[in-house]
Length: 267
Image (tube, rainbow, N blue to C red; front, side, top):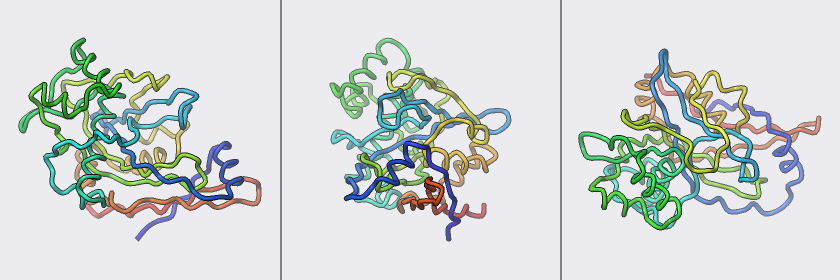
């Protein structure tokens, strides 16, 4: 069962939607991480505004990006193919991309051992490693092996899967994860791909420019009281079935994106 939800499109997207008449571009696999931290009351979400000139520049988003061929880490969880709806190798690639992009763009590393996550990773030696990963001089797997750490992919909680509408020239098949900020780490603007970052409460983000998947995710999260509720809900989320928005051209020259929203499970 789903509840359709309409979202108004920004002017540039309206123009592309109304002018589109061709073959859709292939959707590249990607991953993004909705980073959470407790607040009083409730919780906050980390967002960054992409610099103008980038794909989807000028809007707020979560840390994330495309899957890289090197994103094939050894994972703790074994159920990723079922949770993400793809075979083992592509599933591990998506998980690896989520962890790598979070480290590259926010300086947050989901790694450690079975009992604890890595501590502060903001020092000069860690920053050198982050830059090496960002430039592809070092894979995240190589970094973890050298540091004697393991990927804590059990801290990545699958939330949703979105496919970019067909009218967009660059399209992505993106898995959304939620993750709690490790206690000893700090999210920070390190990638050079953002001109502003912020921690926001989901219910207070409506004034920020966002693409439909980001807006929809925050609206969904605004219905949960705290991080514990989000973690509990993630176990019932279907991140295998893609959300594929439907475009409706309106008579006033605009366009509306209709999104089939999964019904929230009864807790």
